[in-house]
Length: 147
Image (tube, rainbow, N blue to C red; front, side, top):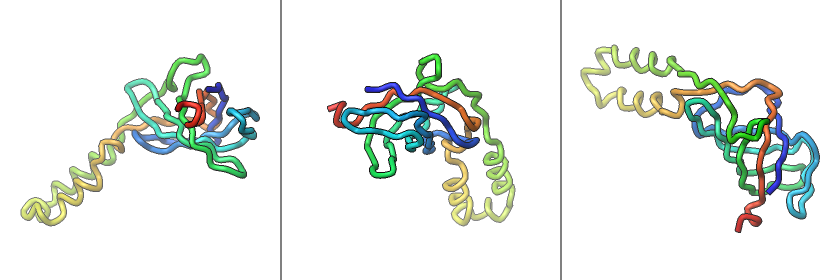
C-alpha cells in the first residue's frame, strides 16, 4: 500500500454513505501503475461522532478506472478526518409538517408512508461539512495487491 496526499477541490457536505471525490496532489506509483497529479479518487463516507471515515474505492485517471482499497487519514496520520457532525433538522421539520396534515393522518395509507419512505433516511439526518482545499492522507492499494 502507498501513502498518497489528497485534496478536496470544493466545499462539500457529506452524509453517511455519500460519495466523495478528492484529487491526487502529486504523481505517484501504485504497483506498476503511474497515477498522475489531479487524478480523481472516489470514496464512500461514514460518519462517527467526531470523525469522518472514508473508504476509497476507485481512482480515475485520464486513461483508466482503477479499483482500489484505501482509507482516509488526517495529516497527523490518525485514522479518519476530525469533523463537527451536525444534524439536518430540515428533514425532521418536513416530516412534522406532513404529519400535521389531517388528511394524511385520516388515511395513513395515502401519503404518510411515502413521506416516511422518502424523507426520513437516517443517512440524511446527520452531516459534516468539509472546506475546499481540505488536505488528507490516503492509504491506498490496488485490489490485486490485497489478494
